[in-house]
Length: 97
Image (cartoon, helix red, strand yellow):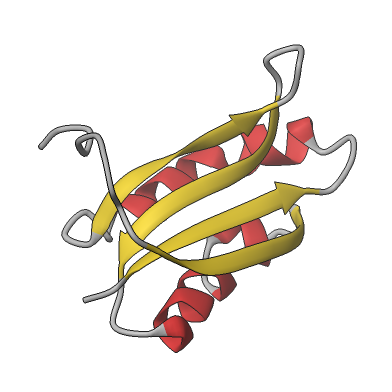
């Protein structure tokens, strides 16, 4: 399956919404453990979350769009925008193997 780099950018001043929705988001993302390569928050210069990034093995771009659409963060209105790009790993290793 192809790799996709998914970046989701939070709306301004939404840290409280992110924290309130975080347990549901983590539970959701965990259901993709078989195709999730890397996942984590993007941070601003002060170390505060400003979005989320994922590298996922998914069948196609429609599956990547569905992943974002059904994320509790997206459903709660946290994300201002997102980007989905094909990703070709060249160097390094995945966290956890």
